[in-house]
Length: 407
Image (cartoon, rainbow, N blue to C red; front, side, top):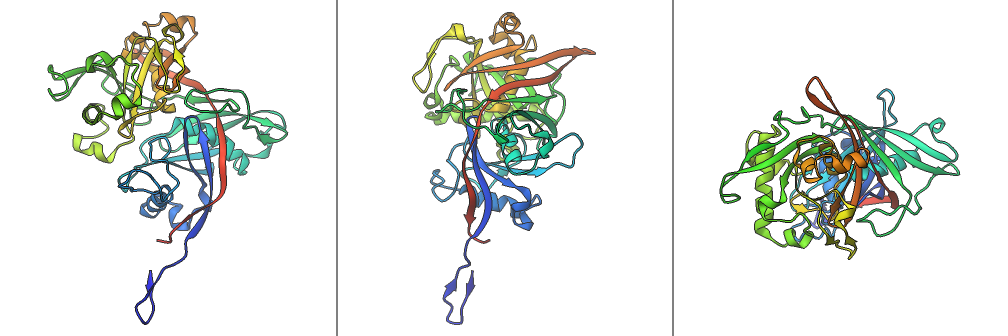
């Protein structure tokens, strides 16, 4: 803002930045080509964070994102910055920013597995993938370097007549309409911040305040795969594992309990030093409850039979129960299910059904079901996972420019 001689304020016009609004899996976000951002936002720092906050419309004390592109949920308050990769054997660099709704904060500590499904499509359509790697018809294999967690992801993007195919008949629970299937492979998905099991145990006694459980401990599987995740048996907290969103999101006491569990888990995983630091690390770790399969009705009214799933999982993201399942948490679920002795594997029947399904596990979530596979092996007494695989879909919703007030 500037002023004239009579002190009447003069406000600068908005700036406009090329952007694409995309759905990936059960999430959606605003995608940017790094070189299209203002110069000061092309590098990490406050200028970049402030721009993305304004794009999304945060912080919003009303919790609506009325004055931005966000959707006021953890699934829709997301931003992605992509660039042509200079890393050997990779096509595109992918940086993910989870924007807080009610605070001026962008969390760069983890990946978004759902939006990963849209990265390959954006990269191809925006010239970030060499044309020699794109068939006229078939599947383009896009090699993604995930910068947040320093991992390789492979997206298999369908191509028709030289263009990304977005329409199709692949149905994904949690997404209203069918689209083209995009298979995503997360290579060596153990998170980049340490060992896959940071405590060295498949199951730990997680110390928590006695107002959560009288004993002061909860059994927990804490794993770094896809995204750091703390798994708890649903029954220990009085849940069945088949709850829908309102059962938890409408209960302020329950949300506070889960956030406390998440904070104590983050300390025990070595992600933070004190529980107070959890407030500055909202995106990771995730906390999830697991249970043996039971019949339930999904949020869309679809009947889910216990015979069609291996287990039930409910996961929280950014302080709320997710309406479906975060893609990175699905990687954690698939990985933990493939390793005998974890709470996830035990809830799924300790390998009996996974053996039939050849490494794949199907779990129930609030919107329906999801199938994810993982390849696990033991090397020198340590569990390793070579890759986790799942199918998602992606679609461009809008493209052009996003406008924000000049700083």
